[in-house]
Amino acid sequence: MPHNRVDARMSEAIPTPSTGALTAKRLRWRAGDISRSERVLPEETPVAMVYDASTYAVMMATPCDIEDFALGFSLTEGVIEQPDELGEVEIVFGALGVEARMWLPSERSGLMAARRRRMAGPTGCGLCGIDSLEEAARTPPIVSGNLTLSADQILAAMAALHPAQKLNHETHAVHAAAFWRPETGLAAVREDVGRHNALDKLAGALSRAGDTGCHGAILLTSRVSVEMVQKAAVIGAPVLIAVSAPTTLAVRTAKAAGLTLVAISREDGFEVFTHPERIAL
Image 1 (cartoon, rainbow, N blue to C red):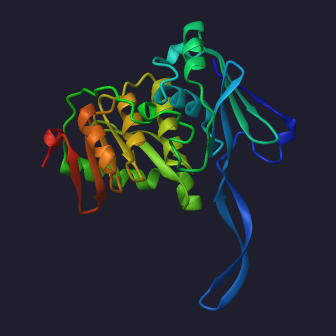
Image 2: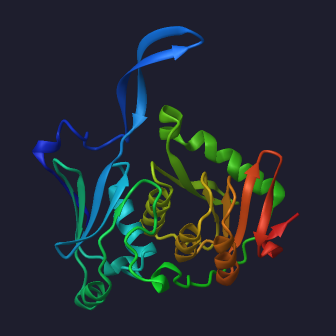
């Protein structure tokens, strides 16, 4: 089972467990008036994904839900294919950031050695460190599922997401990824300064809960780039709904993966870019 070990040197730098937000003093100017106060800001710290004692990737992320992040990243990046392939997970808070130390079975260790990369990714960068065009344009799995959503259900799902963004309500500076089922509503919400990180955390949360994702939709508060589609396909959700527009490569990838891509979702409507047969208008 995953467990935490906290480095004492980090006790003041990163609260453990982290709430994802801290206060900062500020000088505020509005309409000619000056005031001093505090503002709640999201935390951002390096999070290293370490497999078999060797760093594979370093992402700038919000230091909460790290266990979900480690598992979800491992799945969506293709390090593992099944959750049970990941061995012991140790979350270590250090003076410079957080390490998610993970161990792989021998066959996965061999594959990791063959495709190892180092990635120092700024917030929102999902492809830093990719060392080949083939890896950047990897073919996602084909999604399945008989999910059909009405227009009202899509609007209801996105309307439910905003009140559930607790960290964003405090900071107004983080992305969210959520999973929504027609029968039960929101099943999980994860937030992070990086949109890719939020989706990876959601992937980990669903996997830890034993949810294959085939009976619901993924909701995003960000634009839809190709790697977001690739990660959604790995999760297995047949429908992806986002508030912003997709890229052309994201649309082509969603079409190839059999994924219904709904974007530019607003209170009065949305736009369907791929596989509209799942949307009952």
